Each structure stands twice: as C-alpha cells, then as structure tokens.
Image (cartoon, rainbow over all chains, first blue to last red; front, top):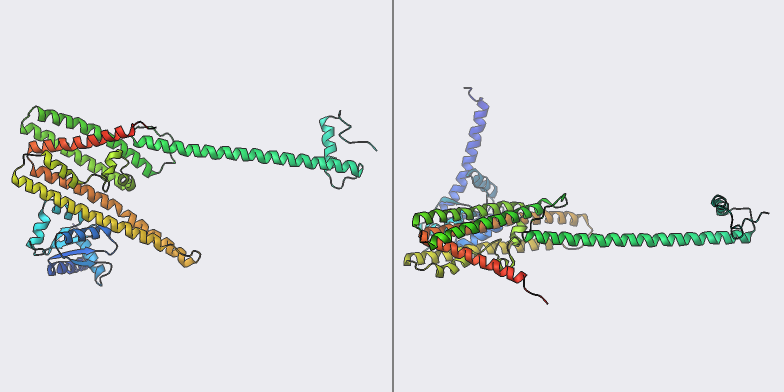
Length: 124
Length: 324
C-alpha cells in the first residue's frame, strides 16, 4: 500500500480543519439559541417553516445567510454538516433537526412540539 | 407597310402573334403607326393589370385557406389534449412538436389511471375482507398493501412534479369535482381527517385526542405551506412588475433579463412546495394508521376511497348533464 504524498496529506488536513471551523461556527450559533432557523431572504419555503414555528409559539433566532455578515461561512458550515438544501435548516436545543421535510414529519407525529418544549423554546 | 394589327389578323398562329407581341413590347418600337402602337400597348397593359389582379386574388384565397387550416389544426390539437387528459389514450404518432413537459403530463395521466384501477381492486378486496369479518392478521396484510400502494402514487407524483410541476399543480389529472378541493396539487389531509372522525367510531378517548391533535397539526402545516406559496406568488409578481417601465435603454434590457432570471429561479421552487405538500399527506396518513387499530385502519381506507369515488362519480354526472 502506497502512502499518499505529503502535500496531499497537508491539503486534506487543511481542508478538514477549515470544514471543521465552519461547522463549529454553525454549532456555536445553534448552542446559543433554544431554536434557530437558517434562511435566505428570498426563500419562500423558509417563510413557511418560520410561520410554522411561530404558530407553535416559538421565537426562533433567524439567520438570513444572504444578509448576515458571516452568512457565507455559515452556509458552507451547513453544507459541511450535510444540509441539502442548505435552507431552511432548523436547530432545536443545539441539535440539528433538519430541513422542511424533517420539520413537517416531526410536526405531524407530535415530536416537534416536544423538542421545542424540552429546549424551552416554547412554554405550555 | 404591313398591317400587323392583331384585330384584323385573326388567322395568325400563336408564334406569329408572340413575335408581334414582342415587337410591340419594345418602347422604342419604330414599326406601325403611333395610334395602333398605343392601342396595342394599352391592351398589353390592361392584360397585365388583369393578370396581376387575378394573381393577387388567387394568392389571397390561398393564404386564407392556410390560415383557416391552421386554426382548425390548433383546435384539433386542443381537443386531442383534452381527450387525453380525460383518460382516453390516443397514440401520438410523430408528435415531435410536443415538449417533454407535455409528454410527462400524458405519461403521468396514464400511470395515474392505471394506479386508480389497481387501487380500486385492492379496495374491493379490503371491503370483502371487512364485510366477511376477516381476522386482524388477514386485514393487516391487505391494509399494508393499500398503504404501500398509496406510497407508490406519491412517488410517481413526485417524479411527475419534477418533469412538469404545473401539470400536477393544475390538478388536470383529477376529475372536475376533485379539483374543487385542490390544494397544492392534492387533497387536504386536515379536511380528510375531519370527515373520517365520524366514520371511525368507536374511538377510545386517547385515540380521539390523538386524531384531533393530528388534524390540528396537519392544518397548521397546511397553513404554513400556504403562506409560503402566497409569499412566492407575491415575490414573483413583484419581480415581474419590476421589469416594467420605459423600454429602450440597454440598462433596462439587462434589468429585464436579470429579473426574468430571478423569476425563473422562483418558479423552480414550486416543485419543493408540491413535494412538501405530498410529504404532509403521506405523514398524516402514516400517523393516522399508527393511532388506529387494524380494523379501524381498514374502515378508514374504505371511507377515504368511497369519498373520492363519490367525487369522481359526481364529476361524471356533471360532465354528462343535459345541456340546452
């Protein structure tokens, strides 16, 4: 088995650490808020998911990737975390919940409300 | 001098007449008296005018014929399209003019019709099992079969929405009465649950609460998606209106193209809304089956199927109604 060349290893480490940093930026935002939604100003599905969370009584922190000063970094962090589509993405209690599809599925089986209550994003 | 007037020379053959005509055509003809040349020229000119007029009339008649044929062709194409959508499968030979979108729509209509036929068979099987008081085990198998069939059509719809989102959104693949209740390319789960609650008794208190919660949840999700769609419509309208204004300058042309590009992007998100609406329908049905017992699930599926059958029957009655 050949060892990969040195410069290849270095570039992969750099690449990984940058990815890691970007993901950390996103996780940091998620930790600071009971509920977070990453959106883009023109994204209408984001509008829908915000409406749903508001309807449940939550006031998620809204990070508009195309307006925020760190928007690009956060977008790449979200992509690195595997978020596709990259908006809308919701975190509750610091945990990645997912995209619109996940939100709707969890809402229908009642889990979403419980997650919001546990994270103290809403109160009964 | 030879009298070459055609009036007196009636017995001349064609060749000679042509030669004489050719001679007369020259403006600087030096033969014949001025008077006879004028008469010949005048006659020639009159003949030319007449020929030209007849030619114009013929051309006009031909063009009119083409136009009316074209209109008839368009009408026939529309009728054909309508007939196809109503499930009459007509093979399209050499139909290269139809876009990929059009073919996707027809393909889906056909698949949906096939699915409906299969679905009705399974429902009849289920009905038989329920009426003959079959055991839970047997019921479960049939119920699971129907549920998996529902999943099939959602998958087929999803593919069709990718190919032609507007066809799915239009509901043209459903009958008219069904279209009355169309929401984002399908039925409203919240309304369906409202209808079912009465059909599903007896329900335990726990079940009743769960079904009511489910109905509320699906309604909340429907409202959220509707709000997103409204935002999309508004945003699309604003984008297109923004490109209105005084035309001419190159800046405005660049603006126009940029705004069209933006509008195209927005149209692209429609498919996502259909997908989430179908996701909501699927999740709601799944959750409903989790709440209900096997027997209740069987009755629910029968009730849903009967309801839509009635809507379709209503559509047929409507379409066949006597008109003055």
